[in-house]
Amino acid sequence: MKAEIICIGTELLLGQTADTNATYLARELAELGIDLYHKVTVGDNLQRVIAILQTAWARADLLILSGGLGPTQDDLTREAVAGLLGETLEFQAEAWQEIEAYFRKLQRPIVTSNRRQAMFPPSGRLIPNPMGTAPGLLVEKEAHCLVALPGVPRELMAMWEQEVRPYLKGYPAQEDGAVLTSKTIRVVEIGESAMEEKVIDLIQNQTNPTIAPYAGQGEACLRLTAKSGSEAENLKLLDALRSTVEARLGQYIYGYDSDNLETVIGRLLKDKGWRLAVAESCTGGLITHRITNVPGSSAYYLGGINSYSNQFKMKLLGVSEATLAAYGAVSNETAKAMAEGVRRISGAEVGLATTGIAGPGGAVPGKPVGLVYLAIALPGFTQVESRVFSYNRIGNKEAAAQLGLTLLWQGLKKSNLGN
Ligand code: ATP
Ligand code: MG
Image 1 (cartoon, protein in one colour):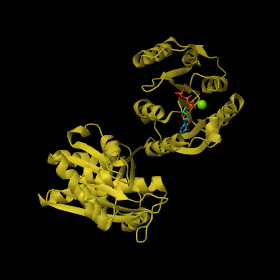
Image 2 (cartoon, protein in one colour; image 1 turned 135 degrees about the vertical axis):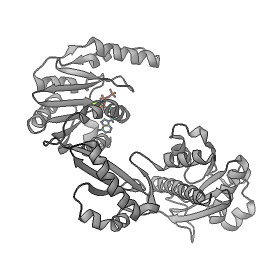
Image 3 (cartoon, rainbow, N blue to C red; image 1 turned 120 degrees about the vertical axis):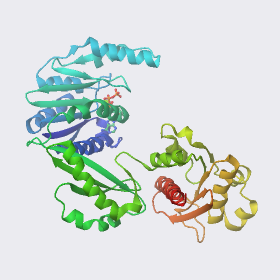
Image 4 (spheres, rainbow, N blue to C red; image 1 turned 45 degrees about the horizontal axis):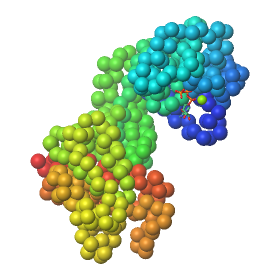
């Protein structure tokens, strides 16, 4: 099966919106083992969209469309699909009921222009949208499959996960009927190239499963993909290679597949019955944000203090004026006092603190932009790490948050061994 991704929206051509949907969809197709030969972007112009769809229909079996399903006049994906199929749009009562139900749930009045979203080509089926008003569209015709999803990334992703991916799993991606299964191994502390070096022979001699390294945000990943007649056989093949990789990279592996640092940290804290409190300066709440992105985090997360100023560091965390005067707000000593302070004041077993210079200004002699200190205070020990990042302000904040969480993960693991 050959796929093509078609992103529709003039804002994409103008560079106003980064095309994250295409990236997401491409990754998902690779995961499913579906070959992707072309990704196309086209503006909100009916004739041009139809032309692109015709080209794609001629060279691909599976067309995935993003955007242009909204209620306004420039949302013309439905018309374009009808044009491609040589069909006329019809009002679909079932779709209209879904849209009405969505508005009722939000307690918002429905607008007549929303009726446009209930217009479907007769050979199309509705894909429910749990997060918005625009239903998706699925067409199966002439050995082709076309899936149209709304442009809003969280709607597109939810519909993909809940409806489209399970549906495509039923399709044989490979001509020989083989099944593909992947496993992602996630590592922190070492970069992509250092990780690759440790498994380079496995990469060079790969057969089945295949093994592919790639860089993530503040982490590196290895994707193992097995191919055989059945999922069960694939899992056996993956388990064997995974053990080999774990023997090489064990200490750096924090999780698998959809894990991230905050979910793994959550599991470790829950297992121990420990609670976490955070004191953030340069990360401005990013760590709190990530920790609380995990459902159920209230079981172990007490809260965070966004202690940006020296006053807050002193009054709310008990950092002494003498420490701040002698070493400065961005220092090993202040980071330590912040982590221990938030731990003491909150009564949590674990304190985590960040302080640094996000930039672009604020450098002083001996303290460059991008310098950060991360501290963890656990029962029995406090640890401080520092690093100099060279990104822009946002990049430095994100990298500091990632390193803070990495340090926390390591600390929790270490105290596991001690217990
Ligand atoms: P809705 O009516 O639900 O908004 P839609 O299908 O009409 O959905 P668009 O109007 O094309 O979608 O886009 C909605 C939003 O999604 C816009 O903010 C747009 O910038 C964003 N968006 C559209 N396409 C993409 C894309 N390929 N990647 C990331 N964001 C996108
Ligand atoms: Mg649009």
